Length: 268
Ligand SMILES: C[S@@+](CC[C@H](N)C(=O)[O-])C[C@H]1O[C@@H](n2cnc3c(N)ncnc32)[C@H](O)[C@@H]1O
Image 1 (cartoon, rainbow, N blue to C red):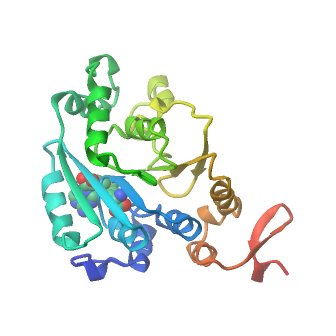
Image 2 (cartoon, protein in one colour):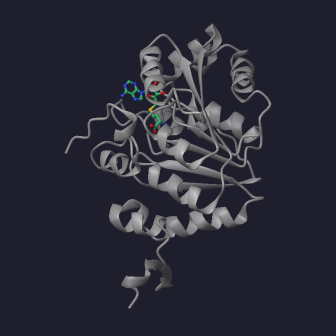
């Protein structure tokens, strides 16, 4: 089944969930539903905008979407998104033209064997400045990293260093499956640069092994939210049944039985 998204009306949660059944594009959306059901989100910062931005706009007070312009197709994509969401009062789109230091890092990370020595020493400082410009002093509740450019690990790291209460990243199950199997590639977990993320004991890291993989870092000041995610993951439904997962996310009751959480109807 194809879903042809041409206008804002075509972008519904149901349509995007269907889309995720044959592409991986929106396989993170049920997880965000869980988050929004459990936790009020004021400002949502996303790196890389797309169809899900509409869902985030529905559920958050404000969405800041940053598109990093590296000279690829981002400008056309941002214009398309602006045509879709441009009139939405809660949306702040930012088209950030990257400097040469970030551009070089993007190129390096997108190669099969990233040569980090070629990344400019000022790159992280420049990326931090881009972060500052995007946020412009505002308190951010959730930061979601799902940009096209291959520097996602560093964007996550900067979000964690800032203490943003909930940080999420998509495609965290990815590795260089199509490239020659070398130890370097295995260790690095691919071009997204996840290996660049440090340990942050002030956060609980929750990996959801579904589709492309999504990881949430929940600040330890939000133990109930972390518990909600743990339950969601423990059901095992996250990796298996869309329909059951949707029931769960929509708030249907579930119980612990034989060491697993099950929907109430299935307990007896
Ligand atoms: C992987 S997409 C995800 C966007 C968003 N987080 C979502 O879930 O809808 C991120 C990037 O891919 C690019 N992109 C997304 N959809 C595209 C499309 N249909 N055509 C061209 N580029 C696209 C854009 O540069 C965008 O920033």
